[in-house]
Image 1 (tube, rainbow over the protein chains, first blue to last red):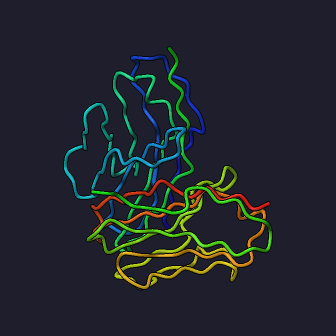
Image 2: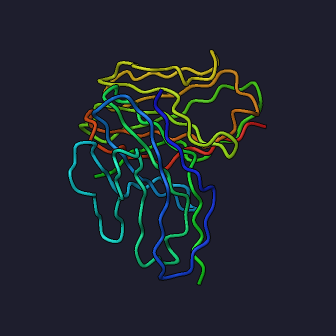
Image 3: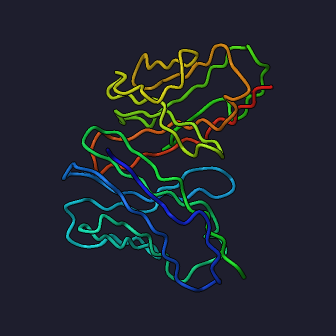
Length: 113
Length: 114
């Protein structure tokens, strides 16, 4: 069965520090995509970064990078130099060839000044 | 690009009433998804369409929920009759139908059933 697990319900991090949000996944499909979304308190879902199962390099988008360890089935999100505006809920998600995307339960990140 | 458009943004209704949520996907996207988000259950996929055809509705809670996509630019999610436990934020999202294509979410409809 396909599954996304985010084990950290909440995290507190000091501003300017790097943050790692954990995500593990389970699928028997060799072809899949992994996504991270940010949901600030205003409620909208914002796409952050994508990693394909066949991608050789870890994805990066500005301060966001994805630590993709395929053998361990993990896709952790790393935010460098955290900012107060990074405080939000973060969701890891996976998409398989059946087109459906499944989401983890999310991690609430609090950046402290 | 206007993004995914949802209406209404907020809906307050009384138990037993019919509720219709509307969604306009991004032009050119051929996959459309309806999600429900609550504190208790997180983000749940209710149903998704590909090329206007419902592909998987296994997440629809019960027969009170129905969804349609009469054309590529419009979809509805209907709850009849509504119950207080249906109170949630309902998101519509659209994407191109490839694994690497991200979903783009609408702003959501915040539904409160009294």
